[in-house]
Length: 352
Image (cartoon, rainbow, N blue to C red; front, side, top):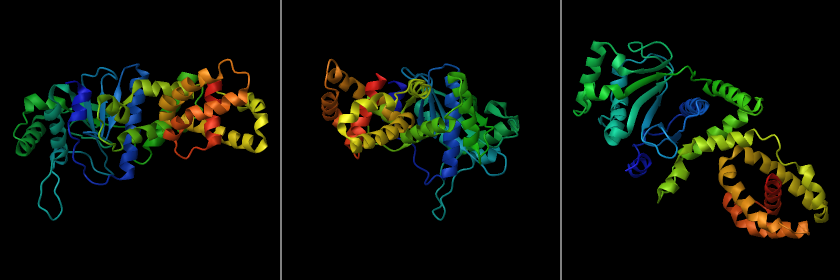
């Protein structure tokens, strides 16, 4: 069974209740930073969010064999200690003892065994017994007393834990991102990526928001996927997805309204004005909604090509195209009106 199939078939971890928006913001900011780092290294990758752990990193977008499980734990104050890392959750008033952070990480090691590359706690505070420097460190670097303490706590929680066998999987990633302004830092890193790619930092915040929005969309609960392809489309963010969005963001020859407006004169001032406004909305949507770029735009383009080919009456061809793609657009946006459908057709026709 492949890695993605294992993830699809295995039940997700139990939810721990509501998660503070601030922690989620930090989690997605760190995830985007990691995505950008791998992209800059031209490595193949794929990511899942809120599935089996906060962030999952696969080592290849098409044929993954290894997974890194990241658990993001932020603190407002206080460094990490072995006792905090292995402290088990207690339900108020119920007397029920839950899993520790280390125990939850061990659960993924047991469930995914040979597919696990490492399990990592990402945090904004250091574990001084391991290191006080920013970076990722394996827990085998702990002193002997700390290793003994961790082993005893984990054996009490799960007798299957074996220090020599399982500790090498464990890592702590002390991140330089500050809890209160992580997204600002990552927007700056996005600007660097865009500058190297396009020669301009323009739209760094827009690109960050779009990528963050796509990560959050992938993290949302979805109806049970019947196939691997459906699971892939609903939950996995790949290098090729990010690359497509970078390409669109860097386009220097985007369609221009002035090039199509003269052909629309027969429609009258009111209709043309409505289409012009819809054009601008779609232009923004196309740069910020990933599903538009990856799925809707290509389908519209493929559908309208044969309709316009060899036609002398542009308005008649446009009306035929509206009828042809109406269902495609409605699936993307049920509230899209005639002006929006027309604007999308004109945009994609000029973009061809």
